[in-house]
Image 1 (cartoon, rainbow, N blue to C red):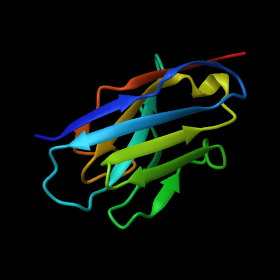
Image 2: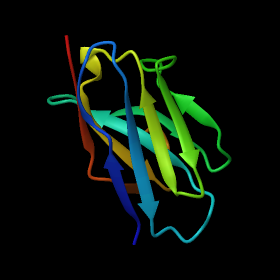
Image 3: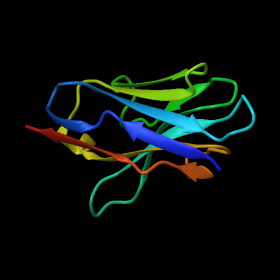
Image 4: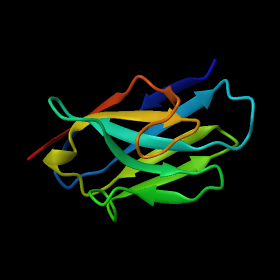
Length: 118
């Protein structure tokens, strides 16, 4: 069974930074896609960015240039560096893996809350 656990969320001021982490376990193969999504109250879930099984990284236009995805395969950990945060970035951020597209992935974490105040 695949298990994903996010951490690193919190409350920050606009312009500050956070780094989210996501540890994955239970996948039996070594190469797999992963992604970050977010969902704010009353809004639809939004794809933030993802990394393919070949380590190709793509981002949503709304975060391009401010957010950065990286992966440590040895630690089975996916990271999301959030810089220059804006109040509109406030949301629950979800890590997901396995068969990812911008529409979703097969396996999901529980989410971590990011709140950005002015």
